[in-house]
Length: 94
Image 1: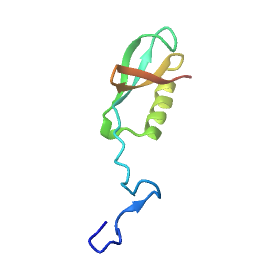
Image 2 (image 1 turned 90 degrees about the horizontal axis):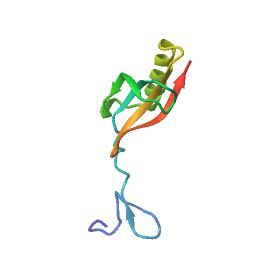
Image 3 (image 1 turned 135 degrees about the vertical axis):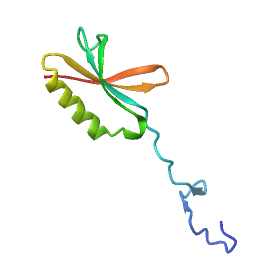
Image 4 (image 1 turned 120 degrees about the vertical axis):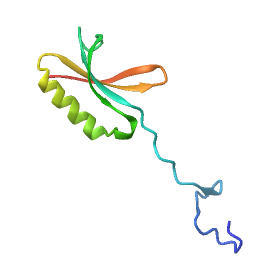
């Protein structure tokens, strides 16, 4: 609360007092890869890397679609860099 007691600048949740705005979401790097032997196959080639600052879900999905068209008949996948390494979460083939 401010010295005059009006609590200006803070909102309350009605239970535990003032709340703070959520902090910005931290994004992890993403990459689009070419796979061998199906959706669980090994990475043959990294086709695109997206640093954390450039990550956008809309852009990533568009790039996966574009690269799948460019590599017709092959499987293209998107992966993100997590605490245990690269994790595959999306794949596509045209």
